[in-house]
Image 1 (cartoon, each protein chain N blue to C red):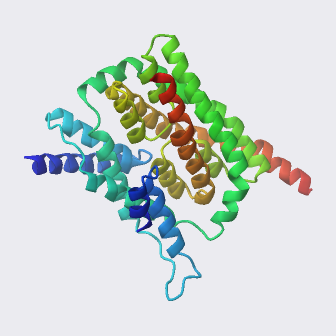
Image 2 (cartoon, helix red, strand yellow):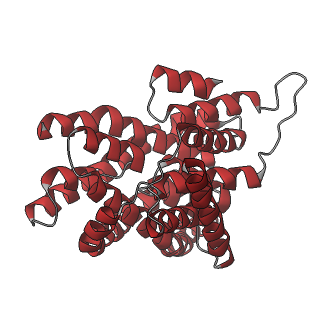
Image 3 (cartoon, chains in turn purple, orange):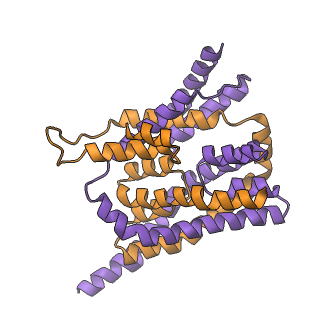
Length: 179
Length: 153
């Protein structure tokens, strides 16, 4: 039954991923896979838990894809972007903590769930840490799912804004200087 | 192998980071008797579907019910963060001559696998994106989480 349930979830996940690809949803494999797995798992009441081998295999494939795409100058880039990277990271994490505090202060969520749900991190590590503290992992999972979909679906808009800024103020300034 | 070692050592996101480092070290032009290869796109998409499955089965009826109550404020918060991030995006583009796609993905508040895959799809400079998100992951695990744990327990 366990294997059959897992296969059903995998099939649902693959089907939804292909549907998302057809609909041109950004990051269709991940978002479609997630929605399909959740729909089949909850719809049929299967209560499937992802086997460790699947988790590690997924990370291995993604990690290898990332590594194979890295060019030899990655270490030079690392040194050059470390400073602004730390600044950006500090801001993003600080804003996440601020959101967490704000949601708790306004009574939208309990303080613990609010912090772990609003600080941008991987779903797995935030849920696991929250659960280890006896917090409601369901609330944390839900908040991160909303984060994932908000970020993925708003990305084209942010990208368009960045391109407009680049065209209007940065590329324009560069060509002015060149002239 | 590097991924397995990192996972064994308990390094955060060990398999993901380790396999990325291992593949990057081996897949370089200078390696004797080996030529760099492109990782098959279908395999990367398979990995993403699998990550989707792992995240999707974490959702329960309870989490969907609680999510419905906070979905709008959480979405609003992340949209606001996206607007704040436009400051950093502008800084990266103007001071560090980074293209718009790389700048946006560098500051996007997403997981390492999500953002890196988007960077590959959009043709962004993966080294820059990966650098910043690796710093975020380590800051989160070694600084933010211990502080949160200390405050909440």
